[in-house]
Image (tube, rainbow, N blue to C red):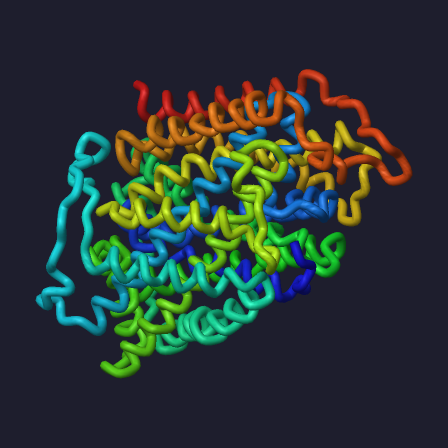
Length: 515
């Protein structure tokens, strides 16, 4: 890959993570009620804490692309082989559907504001497959939203085909033209008196109390919010394309985490305080397609300004889609380069772009775009994303034990390392306690998708590569001045941690759903 961008340009590329708040803003509020801003704040704080330990791992491996899952996988691969590709796979499965969901929502925004509701373009639909066995009402369908969403993804693919530097320039333009004005506009309802504290009262879950059912709603909200609010980690996907990765990588991920915390705190607070629970429960907010019109109402916008706001909101969604395509394609590429995924994905074009991985992303998301319920897709991918973070939060301390002499240009504070290690078990608990809130089939389908990585890895490793990993896979971990890796020293601890994660997930399910 070509080292063409600075750390601050990477921040702009990664800021698509901030736009992900729009994907599930209404869905989470519809489940948890007035406490939704608390859910977002807690989740984004966990994501920010994780960036510190992920920054340490990223700086250790400046030659790897594809994000922190690849760094964490190098810790697990020396202890439990099948866990490493599962972590990378979970990261890809989580980021890839952002293309379909973001492009679908963007298409929905544009159709809702520029095409009359009763127009044929907004009403025609062809049902292809009934998936009611997974969730009532779920289908594969073709409509104008699918067609326009596919066109949006093709445009983004074309932009990224020319290299990381052009992607960075487009991301800067989308941030300046979309995300930044929207965040600034969020302060208008605050100073204009449109946000009232009455809309946060009573400050309890939607069921009306902090009882057993209320905590179930809160944990279910945290589970899905993690899919968006942990996403600052995507900033380290571009380590092998940064001019100064060892110094710039930690700066990029930590600053992205700080900015995400601000956005994920302000935007849900303004929407809940301005619209109230009743407004947040409206169908257009829950599906996400009416967010633009609702926001225009909060700031008193007229017809022209409403259309302009929807365009800016669409730019923000495209920012998220651009980030997701760049990240997920690099995850697939590095997974193939390191010997975990099919070998044909280990390919770069003349601009240093993993185009084959991008084509796989495009085809996969064209299928997902046919889904009639984006929140269900989001929840299934969230199972995989939280699994990845569960494993990755522990991989940092495994690296500390196994590779004490490896180069560490940045070292996370030990207290944060300990806190994040504990949060790995909290994440596992959230899967068991919260995933079922979004549909009875979310946990089994999410786990089935996660374990699909195992046969893919086994075929690549034992059939294609004859049971041998590429020589470069762990080369960044060799201590300076030495030629061999430090022998593993963690002993039984990774196995105990893995067992603890499984028990935590099982306990979360049994406590809230099993009795």
